[in-house]
Amino acid sequence: MPHPCLRCGACCAFFRVAFHWSEADAALGGVVPPELAETLDPHRLVMRGTQASKPRCIALRGVVGEAAHCGIYEHRPSVCREVEPAWEYGRPSVQCDKARLAHGLAPLAPDDWLVPIAG
Ligand code: SF4
Ligand code: SF4
Image 1 (tube, protein in one colour):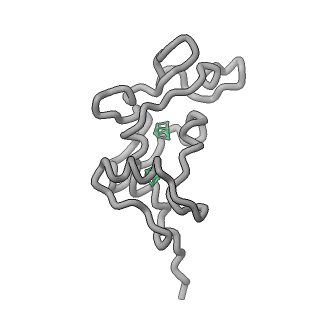
Image 2: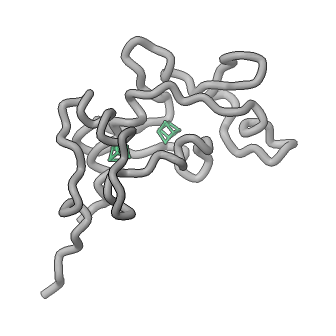
């Protein structure tokens, strides 16, 4: 069973994705590609596309709700790493539920994480 996020991507097309500018400064150990971000305020950058009235991060690949993934997964901002898919660790996730509902997707349930038994 593929990871539920790979059939979703809703949170990457719902929230404004803002983070400290140092995360895109390689000299300070930042890994986010700076060309994919723009200035939000003196302290923060924002992923391009996520400030739009219908947000969609520039790094999101695929179709929300069908097959989607982050094109810079290993280099995504810290805020993206902090979004917890609902029930992956046995806990609900308001952020996940909210984004999915906004895209007409049912919230994840604990059963979405059950791994089928082989054989
Ligand atoms: S909304 Fe939830 S299930 Fe969808 S990609 Fe984000 S964390 Fe994963
Ligand atoms: S950087 Fe990747 S994980 Fe973060 S919002 Fe964009 S597509 Fe989603």
